[in-house]
Length: 128
Image (cartoon, rainbow, N blue to C red):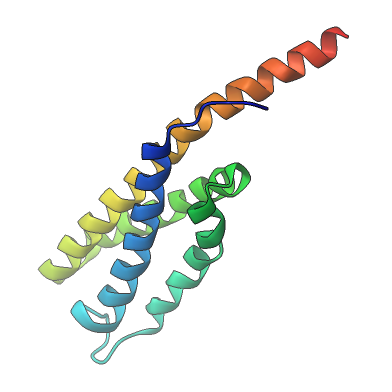
């Protein structure tokens, strides 16, 4: 499948994933943890580490499933932004919302040509 994919979208998705990992660790350990000294919520970074290698390589399959994973982070962060008692936590949640949306949108638009070509290829195969 010879498809032209946009490298800027891939780089933005990769940068937002790395930024999200750094933000989540900093937020839960240092900046505004739920408990003083850090909390176990820092472990929420572990699922983000799973797709990191594939996203950094631009793997189409990894970008597909990690975009679905990113929706979980978006939902969690919207909930925390809505209910956080600490104004600093609200700011951190807003940053996480932006990073997760950047990843999701960039991944979707990066994958769009590949999905379109795969659908076209499937249509051609079914005609044979």
